[in-house]
Amino acid sequence: MLAGASLAAAVGFVATAADEQPLAAPTRQTAITAENRLAGAHTWLGREATARAIEVYASATDAVPGDTVALHVSTGTPARYRVSVYRLGWYGGWGARKVACFPGCDSSALGAAQPVPPPDGAGTVVANWPVTDEITIGEGWVSGLYEVRARLLSGPQAGNSATTFLVVRQSHSSSRMLVQIPTNTWQAYNGWGGTSLYPFSSQDGRQAIRVSYERPYAWSLPGGQGPLGWELPLLRFIERHGYDVTYQSDVFTAAHPNSLLRHRLVVVAGHSEYWTKSMRDGFD
Image (cartoon, rainbow, N blue to C red; front, side, top):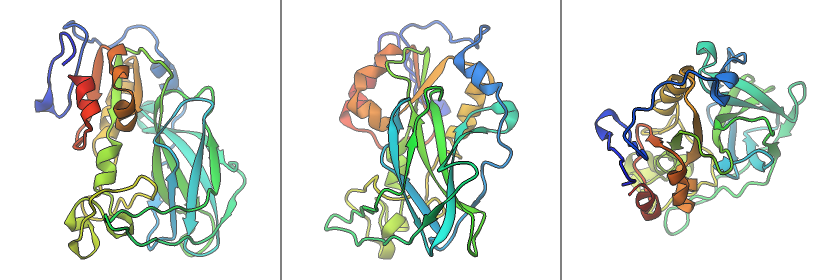
């Protein structure tokens, strides 16, 4: 573990600290307190589409301001849709704030149906859909967990939507607190395309040996994991109290384990089950 670190698994998270001084709630303004004074969105959750009426996945799990992230959207039949992006947090109890719409908040795109490819020999399903939209991360987007919601505007399921999530990092962040988002676990339990790493969410009980990020999330299938059960309550608490916090995914930690050393406290929320050796080495 890091010097002076403590283990707090009994309450559902792992914490590492550079010293043993308690991390008190801040009394000064942080980027998080300023962000959470902005107006929250009242209807950010929405209704999830069924029967593959609309689905979406992103080309990345993490991004920083200035990056462009590709989206891959499929609609079951030709239909109009709009992508809205929300930052999760406190926001006076609303839980999220709308930060952007693509192609625009008063415009839409025409979707088309994309196939579900068969699994390969390892049971892996890779959607490999064409790019339909692009999100440019704004310079003012504060580090956090962002929901990307593709909402149908026409057809029998108009108003229903599909979601994916994106972690916006702060480059070379040295915030006092870092929250690691467990996207590996979300994908392990994701049964989209007929396979996950578990028989109960795989077609005919035949689980995959490995799974791909290049596919939508099937949140409603048995065992589906996502941020609304564990991460959202944590984010609401942290941001309500204005802690100096930034965010990154476990994918980024695996590639850059030394990034953990820039923070006094690293929090891993809830169900973070799938770790690489480099992630564990970074925490050790």
